[in-house]
Image (cartoon, rainbow, N blue to C red; front, side, top):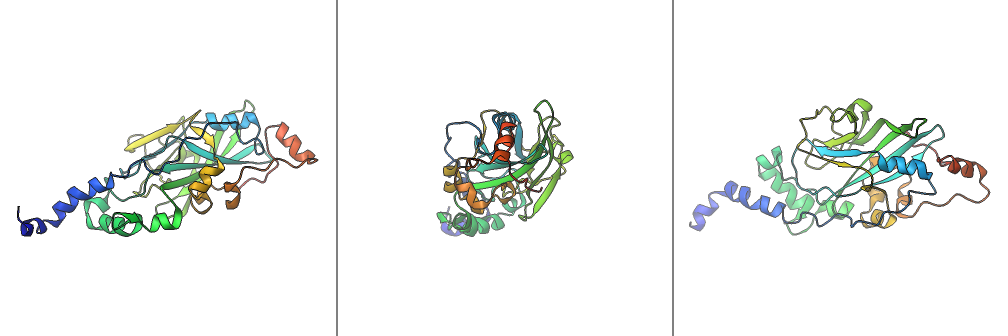
Length: 273
């Protein structure tokens, strides 16, 4: 085939070459597994920490897009004074690129333009996304739980990002619309924001569920490595800077905090959801 004939078919070339480039970096920007340890001892009691880590949570999407979903769902928590607890979850994707079963890819040039600037400058160097936020893609959401007398958690509602990065409240009915037994958050956008609504059990193209062993307290080294102080804002239940350091133990002599810790609750304000 001559050069002229090759150049006369730009859409065919792009359609073949770009998906190969899009798949070439899968899995390179996921956090390395950190050995599991005790739940956040200065924030929550052992019983509540165990309940959080047993509570199965699912992450999915209604559209196919680039990026491998990580093996671990990390969390931080902020218990309240009435038995409720806010849990902020961090879901890690290997990359945030527009290629997949979505309109950007179908039309080729919009996806290519995004990839050339936002995600990978000239398909090689770091793009705006990496410079502004850090490696990979991290999406956050938080769920307000209430605990019954038997120590079981029940999701009340959640907060996540929409595709325009605006926060959206997800009611209990939204969380259980895909699976009545397991809260599920999902995306409707190539950029993985998890504030999707209106989907049913058959609408997701993928879903990954996390449970005991795969839900772990957020290590400060992971928070620092992925700069979680400036991204995944819906998951933030503690000040941004506090994500980069281990939780501080209760001060000696703080009897109210000690009593709350003995009851499995920390003497911390609840984050309003």
